[in-house]
Image: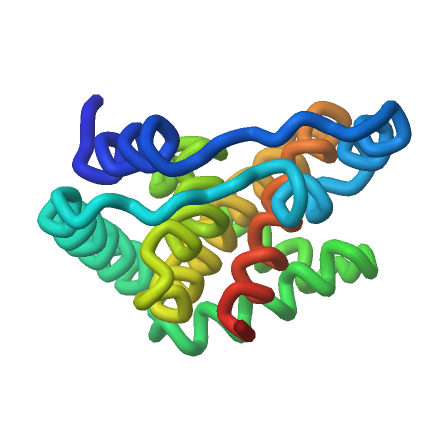
Length: 185
């Protein structure tokens, strides 16, 4: 399936995002352990050319429709979702059974809403830097996209076992935290 969000992700990766080489083995090892450091240090992001403004608007409209359907199914507003996600995330870290049950339920509802980690990376970490005059707005949106995908993976990990999901959850968590940093700038 080729969505507008997918097309924008391809343009951002192809035209804006450049990976920087690690200076030494210690940096490589740190990047393997610290996913947040990867977002901060491993990528150089150039501005997205203005010729993609319409594509950005279309992709954001696509997400707005998708998000509205998800929030309706969850029975939440965007602000309530953000607050509930933070509580669920903290509950996962603390292994709180009540938070884990809510996280699993939300994860089932969120299943398939965000296509993959590449979409999370694009919208949470790169697009806000590629369109700096809309950084806060795009980081807020990207952070919510990361939260939705986090819930899906968390639900899968809780239901089917988390051995293979721990690294993916750590990467998504880092993207969510990085988008929060971008919002603060």
